Length: 206
Length: 132
Image (cartoon, rainbow over all chains, first blue to last red; front, side):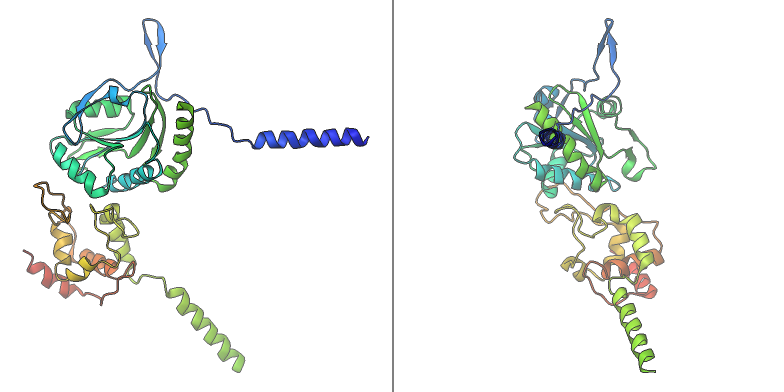
């Protein structure tokens, strides 16, 4: 009887210990799959060719095998951008020593946001340009990539503060250009929770 | 009778203590949150060097006479490093009324450790009349 009871106890303890072990969260692939030549193809960020704050070419190939966080902004945005940038800075601080991790901010207002202006903006918010890219490209192309690939609603609206209406979402992309998670960049708590998602993707990407 | 006096004193003390953290300008806070808080943030700390902090701010202290004009007309090249030709500026708020500006001024002047004497409507009108 005692032996039985002891083994039962041991099994219970083992079950409890095993269930406490933190499991790595398997992140979903987000976005609509496409059918190409009769095969299902996972949603992927398209290839693009833009330039960054130093006027150096910045294209999708540079993000291959990198986990990155993308957002859409413009330097004269008086509405949600400062809060989103504040949270991007929190992400920068937390992952500053993480290899193969980048931050990418696409400007929706290429007319005003010249590379020089974005560089000044970056330096005044304290962005570390070794991990954070500020991207300048043709407006229509950036709008299309925002709406269709990153699923961030963005459009020109003369009545919106600063002339553009857009969402402050942060998008998490894996090393193959697949969308794996998102957070509301204006919500501090949402971004705090998002750190777990970023950690999970980084753990899977090793 | 003594008991009554003591309890009244206690209640008064409690009332005073709970009032300590209260800002006296709740309408100012409403306007601040709507027109200023997105950039200067709810805690007044702003964003790095781009959006200056209003918390115990020397700039705020020095520019008291300009404050209503700055809120109404915005300001250019607030970033300390003005060596570059690129200007990043604070947007104007031309639609704000004098009352709204008054409430915002009094709120930021008495929040986050700032302590300034209250402004009155006549002060705002006078200051707005001599904007650059």
